Length: 123
Image (cartoon, rainbow, N blue to C red; front, side, top):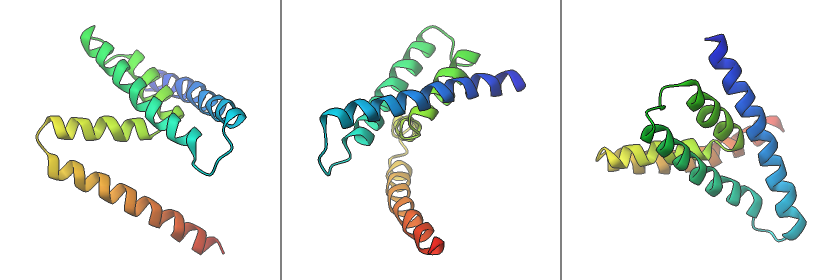
C-alpha cells in the first residue's frame, strides 16, 4: 500500500508540474477571456489517459504500478477531468447511457453550484 501511495504521489507531483507548465505556455500566447489553458489541459489529459489505458490494456499491464503512477498519479495531477472522461466512456461502453449522462449533468451542475456555495459561505 505504501509503495502504491508513493507511485501515485510521484505521478501526481509530475502531473501538477505539467499542468502549471501548460498554463504558463498557453498564457504566453493567449490572453483572451476563454480559459484556454484549462480547456487544453482537460482535453489533452483525456487524450493522454486514453492512450495510457489503451497501451496498458494492450500489454496486459492494467493492474500494475505503472497504472497507479501514470493514470491515478500523473493524469490525476494533470487533470481530474481525464478520470471523468474515462469513467463516462466506460459507462457508455457498458450501455449505461442514462447513468453516464446523469453523471455528466450532475457533475457539471453540482460542481458549479458547489463553487458558488463555497464562495458564498466564505464571505
